[in-house]
Amino acid sequence: GVAQAADRPDLPFRRGSFTEGLSATSVNWQGSYVGGQVSYGSVTSKVPSGLTNDLRNFYPMVPPPGVAYDWEPLGSAHGNATGYGAFAGYNSQWDDVVVGFEANYIHDGFRSVTNSVGPIYVAGALQSITHSNATVKLSDFGSLRVRGGYVMGCFLPYLFAGTGFGSQTVDRTISAFPYPLLP
Image (cartoon, rainbow, N blue to C red):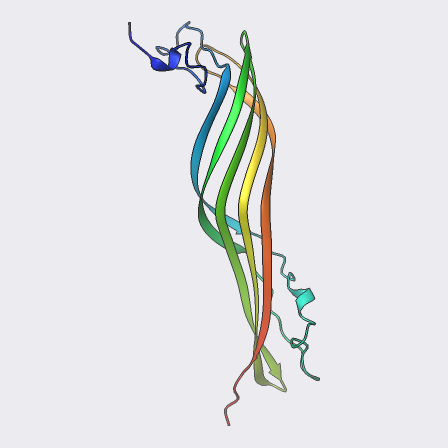
């Protein structure tokens, strides 16, 4: 026969097992498992267009008399990042039914930025330039899942339900700069 290390009964930590194809050989899905992961992804954050509205009345941003700042709305924030993490879980098997749970954690550096620039006109003349900025940072993400499946030979279809959680911060800035008028 062919030696297959994944089918050894003294290795209970494996996530699944291999057999000689779709045969009548029984597969043992029971046991615990751990692992590491590396990720790469992109994020698009839908930032509310008026996210910086509450910052517009702070000194020195209060416009001079007769001037109304024309703040442009913020758009979506985009960014790419890599991350690393770990997962762990346990499966319990009763005949052909498998029930399990899994926890997952990823630390990443997603940082998406959106900004807008707008002109300020007074009596038809350009007086200043406004700038709004929002930076969305997602540093940690995790999930918890439970699953149930039914063994069909060496195939395990399953359903799962779970929840995710993360740590996010939003940094906001606004500014207005005088525009030099030409004589």
